[in-house]
Length: 475
Ligand code: ARG
Image (cartoon, rainbow, N blue to C red; front, side, top):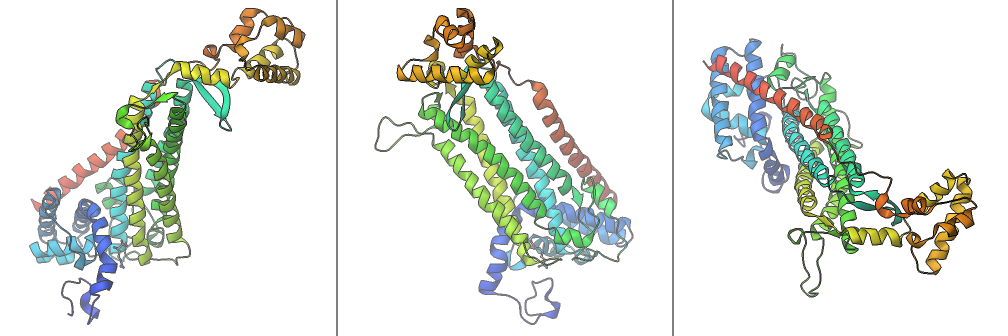
């Protein structure tokens, strides 16, 4: 054999070296390192299943499982470095196991690296999705905490002041958005949490395997039936997750942008520990972390395009292009997982200047709609009330005065209806916004926590089942 290391070397008299070898596997090996614990776990489940089905005898399966247990322990201590010469994690695990027992040469019966890589990806993604979901819960908790602060807040359309709201009203909007991101990830999780093992290279296998069994040993909720679909759909779950993460960062980036804008008006006061200064201008306090977070969304767009473009125009079956999908999804997860705690920290330490908010609302004639509504409640048709209020605003702007300085008599006269002073003040007082202070309750968060706990319990139960079966075989 030209290169005795290659597990597929039989039909070759030369194998890739130098630039070609490095092109095929250098970057891939560093990405695959993240798959190592899952590749070993998946191999254990596969070998247990082969043994249960009588494809491997107990005396063949036992030494393989013992070897895999050893590798698992070494991997846990970071003592199992992957060799790029061996292309990928799958070949590395098999080669290392074979160093420990020749029986390991039988472990690849009835599987291919193509169903194996899909398996590793799913096990890895499940773990990372649960981690991201937990981070999202912390973010929603931070918003819930902030929503307890009783303060009015500005709302905008076209970046112009719209109407007075409360901080809790604002927080609720993003709690809803992040909860939607959470459920998008959960829905994607359901599609990912299916067993691909048994798909083989593309056409399944004629060995009498039990796909349900490996599914239960690995905590999958079912089996992805079509082998051709398992292999051809590579990249799809990655793209779907990247989309969910991109939306998440779009939401986080929007909060970041709001914070940048509000801090430029000194309405939002960032903690010194979450802002930075200028090397030249001594007075500056800049919202760098928030701008960088906003910028990270661009990276997500790139990764999303990357993952979508990878699939377009590929023929059915396995194509090496799909190896690139690992890069996209791993970096997207890294980016999201880096950004969420940053936003949490900023929200946990942010302050708001109530006087500056009041001034912003007054300056923006934010209560004009309330005034038009008051006139309409008194019987003026809303369209006329709108016109009258518009004229009042125009006059105030000309006199450089705020709406709150209006007199009830002036309004009554113009509108032709009787408005009392207290009624007018109730409508024009920015502090008395009709958007009530309403903190986010723990009922909002509990179902999110429950969903993660259920997913994690299922994984843990499967781990125990696998451990038990490995013990039964290894004795
Ligand atoms: N490292 C490969 C990947 O990520 C595994 C599958 C390789 N299969 C193949 N026929 N080259 O896609």
